[in-house]
Amino acid sequence: MFSVVIPLYNKELSIRNTIQSVLDQTCQDFEIVVVNDGSTDNSAAVVEAIEDDRIRLIHQKNQGVSAARNRGIEEARYEWIAFLDGDDLWGKAHLQEISLMMQKFPNEKVFVTSFEYSDKRPMFRHSRSEPIFKVENYFKEAMKESLMWTSIVVVHKSCIDEVGGFNENLKHGEDLDLWARLAKQYHIVKSEKITGVYRIEAENRNISSFNPNKSMIFNYRFNDASSPDEILYYKHKVINELRSYLRTRRVGLFLKLYAIHSRNTSLLSVLKLKGL
Image (tube, rainbow, N blue to C red; front, side, top):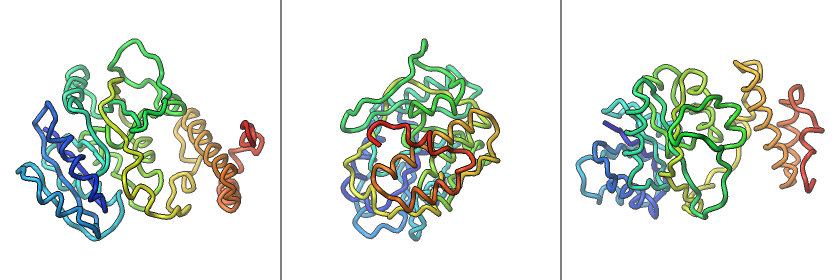
């Protein structure tokens, strides 16, 4: 029923535990599609050593995580695509929870559970009356809460055909770009149950240097917004990015991003931050 798509690039120390977290699922109706994106370590060998016929390892030249995920989607044999990065973990009931969500909302096509960071840092969560619900306003709610994160998202393959896959021209924010496109076309069903762990200590998290030309926030155009809430959402993203550049004294990036979005972002709104 599920095709679990795992992009792989130099995750030799993590990939075995990641795959094991899938094999340990209480729901066992899945295949695992691992796309080796030109790893230069022993990542592929670690995958090959795991004996399970449901695992398929596909090799390609290094093209980036978006291309690897898109390749996995293309190779998937099932209609439901479950994403998992090569250094993150699922709880044993992740796919079972998704199945329950599908039963409750059989006509929907985008499902997402909840996650926690491996260091247990506090996270804001909206208070809701039901543990499984439709997100009423993605752009409004996502300004405060991390509604979607790659390793807890399950999408019907037809949705990718409709809105397109991960933008291979982006290396920063490519996931947020896809979630926004999905949110404009489909209802998002969310569960408050935490079924994923974002491993912040995993190796190779920051291997690539930041390139603004490959960043979603640098390439976003407010004229493309479909609603006032979408405009507010991206203003929020831009302001937070500008503030981070001020904190870290990356003046060049600050000036470049502000020049792009100065018509929609005031300096006053950027400077309204404690500590600046």
